[in-house]
Image (cartoon, rainbow, N blue to C red; front, top):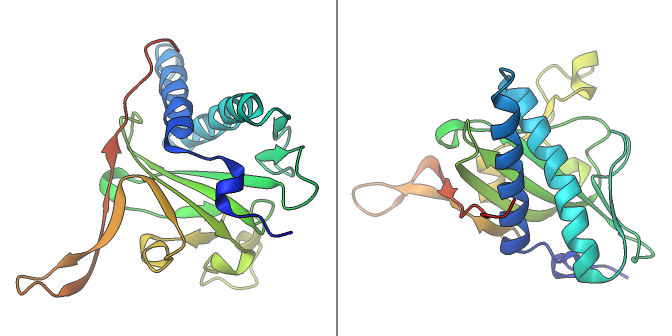
Length: 199
């Protein structure tokens, strides 16, 4: 049986709650230590895994498990006999500039939550779509060791061309020329989300 994206119950509200918890955790940690952008993205990804697993388990009445290592899918739906995982990718993309990266373990044939964030997670872009390993763009250094480690990417351009994506926060579109025709410029509009008061 092929699952639809709707089966996974990834909604705007569930993402909002996960982002809210992630922003709260970042705020707490940053009182004590300076964090690189890479580490911030890893923290957001980890908090999203745990928070979404908890919220989805409650909603679906079966366990949704967060990953316990990099080799496991980020979210595992125990109530589904097959097609039962979701990946989460978080990238620092200030002003909508940058790309999502996928390591060798994370390029799974499954639905992906793609999150672009600004420095303090006050503005985001979030899309949900099914991705296969071939959707990731190979680096120019084909055959090198780096190619298998965080070298494949997904850009705004590739995402813009995907009509099957569900945009939960923000949007990606071509910038229009003065005459109203689409240009080659692509803009990502990141938006603020309402933070929960009870995190």
